[in-house]
Amino acid sequence: MPHIRSSADLRNNYNEISTFCHDHAEPVFITKNGRGDLAVMSIEAYDALLETAQTDAAIFRAEQELSAGGELLDAEEVLTSLRRKYFG
Image (cartoon, rainbow, N blue to C red; front, side, top):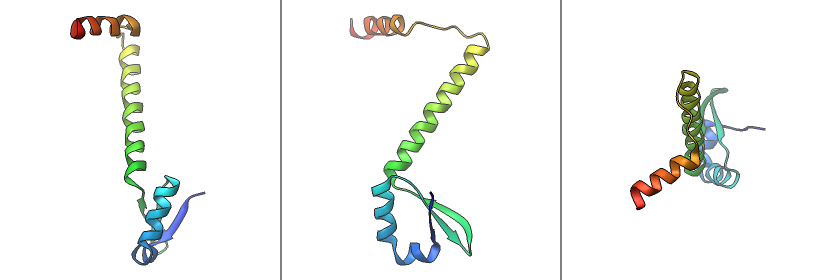
């Protein structure tokens, strides 16, 4: 269930909202005049969300490249080749 607070709560209860975001690793949605305005989250939760989005985007690009005729390589062979090249 989303955690929703008013903009007045953000001004008056910043520490409580900050603690919630850190303890629960999920956003708090801030309303202004009864309508959604902001999503507030901890830096750690934001970094995790961003990392997931970047990973999803990389997988999507790889799938597009493969469907467009890209070459599929064996991961073990590629890693062995890179180790030989960079670590002797």
